[in-house]
Image (cartoon, rainbow, N blue to C red):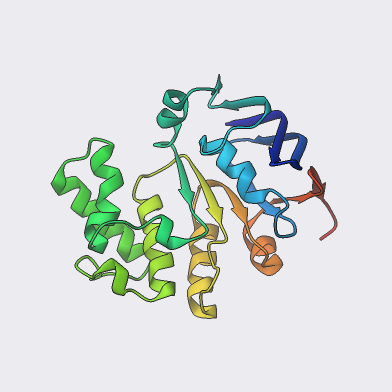
Length: 216
């Protein structure tokens, strides 16, 4: 589904990714760990076409992706949860934020409302439709951000620190949701307990290189 070949990325003069190779197959549940600034978020932004590597091949769903049009097509198929919820939420109400994706994928208003209701219920947020987004707590924003991603019914999820700033109960809710789902996903987290509980393969990014972790 996703294949990165010999990816190099520099920020100013600092080498972030050094000839990185990374593959995601259908059904994979991958944990991506590493120190702050090691390139975890950058790697996922390259997959989404939000930043461009200096060299290397980005191949997604069997096709090399180079242009903005290439990446625009895959953004309806890969759901990306940003690390900062304020980067994800931009509409006045929860309903509008979650419905935005389905409507842009061609769903009718009635269909979008059903999707919003079902998605909110899955996160124990039933009745939040008319809540004002900027008035939500940090944890509520995180869950609504996740709802905007899930509502698009993506084939792959990229989750950047999905439980960051959440209490234990809400974190457990997301853990349970992931474990019950059939999603293919990449999970970025500093929480090794979460990574162990929700992923099957764990990769570490460190000093520009990626490696499979074993025996953990």
